[in-house]
Length: 109
Image 1 (cartoon, helix red, strand yellow):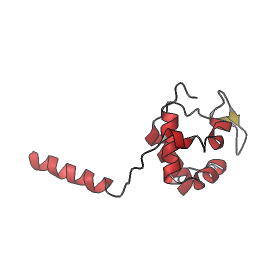
Image 2 (cartoon, rainbow, N blue to C red):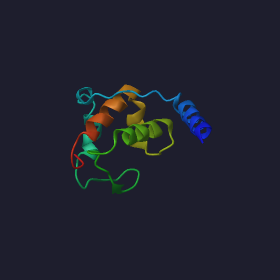
Image 3 (cartoon, rainbow, N blue to C red):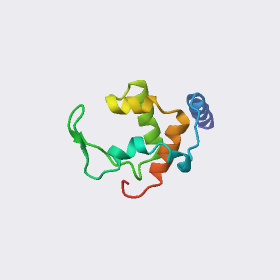
Image 4 (cartoon, one colour):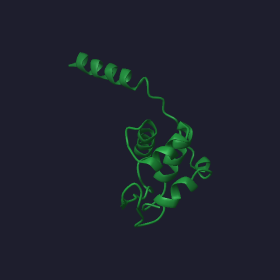
């Protein structure tokens, strides 16, 4: 049983070796909020491009989820023209900063 745990731990370490965590700073995010708040800061906002759908509020969302979502828009795994353009303009550090900022907000702000 102990060998099994060791094998599992080694596998997890190898799987995460390529991922470099960037620590976000909510204060640095303030310079980039204008890209987000126009859609994600309006309760009940619905976008009309490329189709009509409700835009989620980001406040209180998990930082890791926000970063992964932005990375997916940047690499094309998630598809939305506006989000892809915004994500492509962000560095990994800026993504982390925005993610921590929104994760610390209450009630979807």
